[in-house]
Image (cartoon, rainbow, N blue to C red; front, side):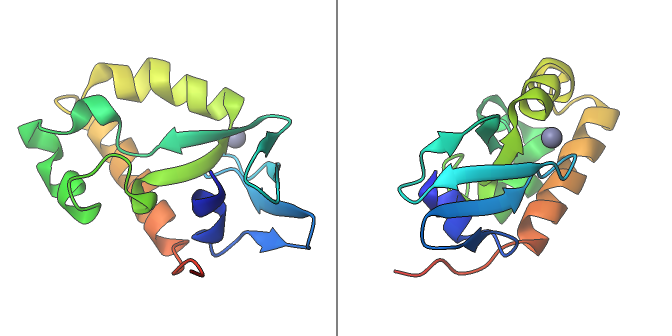
Length: 119
Ligand SMILES: [Zn+2]
């Protein structure tokens, strides 16, 4: 989870904690220095793991190197948003036009926040 924070251009590290914003609702999120989530912070697969290998999601999968666990596909989100996405858009699958639109927009947002993590 530390890598998701380190590669998030909106995340700030004050020597003790990472502070960033939920990818969806921009709620404040915090992680410990070692990446341990605090409060409602959770790790989200922007393109759901189950969508990899699906033809409709191929263009999105390509943008994260066809690897669900590529850091470009990992985002910090509050637990509520993460669960809501999982039970709606993710569950509908990439064959659903609305789900495809929402996940594409989220991936755009994640990639706009990308920064190369420090080694
Ligand atoms: Zn949220």
